[in-house]
Image (tube, rainbow, N blue to C red; front, side, top):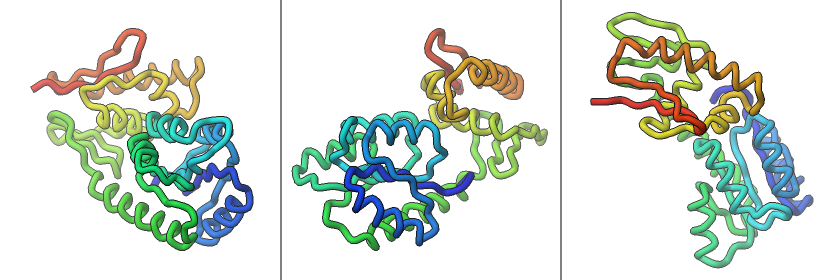
Length: 229
């Protein structure tokens, strides 16, 4: 996993929050506590997170809406819902919003730790299998940051790699400009937008050797990477 591991714990009960944080920290997982949905969303936008745990009954912001927004911006970030949901429809609603697990209270703190460990092991296995990505006639070595075609290798910067992989994850679909800015630059302002324009231009020049690949602007919305067969 790129960068330091960090968990966001959005929990309204501070006693539960502190117990959970202390336990996760003892496992080597630095944890940030937010006791309402508004602060949790702000933290998600400003921090580089690896995991999110959301209390199903948060104040200020609906917990399901929080999960849905986090998942919309970063659909690879694991989200756990915890709480006293008893209705089957509410549990299904949370999972459909983007949560990958639901733990009903009271739950074992050790179980939470084990479930997090299991997800992380699965992610590592998945990441290892993704060292090579194919795009048209290109092969992308994500470990060495290389774009390869006809035995020619071009090195990609970290930002170029992250941006290209974001477009590949949404192949033949539009990536909103603001989503790309928040995902790659963690902010949405004039300078990061101009910076992204430079990277888009560079990626177009790198991908021009395969005529079946097109990275195009979708006016007023964002970008679309397409492969034509």
